[in-house]
Length: 278
Image (cartoon, rainbow, N blue to C red; front, side):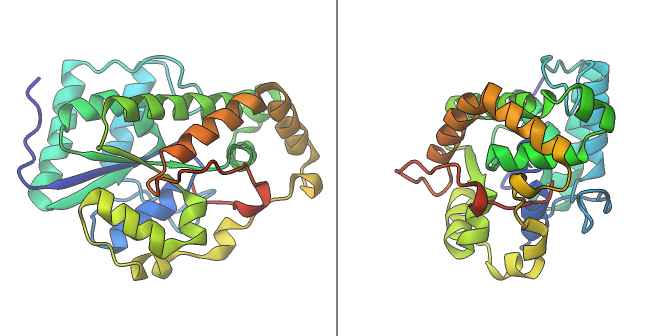
């Protein structure tokens, strides 16, 4: 298939494992002048201020995953795109290219589509949000359907590993087009982080846009030792026992690929992270 022409457009895909701050970042980028969608998904459980997901891209990716018998919590199968779906994707891109010079979309599911989007959008950039795995897994347990939470508690840590391994693999294959952002860095040092993000995108971003949308209460950390749902705390402890070493090692790799390009490893400081939007 012919690659989509973009002329001078700046296109950004914001993705990453769910519950890693993707909605927060999409909302502030939209406020800063990078249009994140034509029709947005409204507020819902876990994102009471809105998911900031372009429903065109969202419904397209959900339909493709359903056809591939894959999904948000079951991302193991490779995503195959047929010719009809390629034409649908090209139409989504063309409509937004015509409407905006700077635009993007956000959806955690896009991580599963990275090779596809990288192919048909050769000039697009990809911002991968990530976050302390203990915080992500805890937040995912809260959002999951009870059946999955109680009978498949392995899905949350396994999907975190899968999403971030896929993202790191894509990052290595496409140097310069992919950056990782720890939502905690945006919380702790917004000006420095936004300046680094501006440099990566080649677009001036006013830090005031972040302060307009950021609400500290939306990123309040949970203490698993006193968490109100003991079952979730138990699941998290089991996850750490079974997959904690793998998650810690992967978290270190993600830190090394941060948009801030930290040279030193940062520990998994649970108390310093927070409850982020999806």
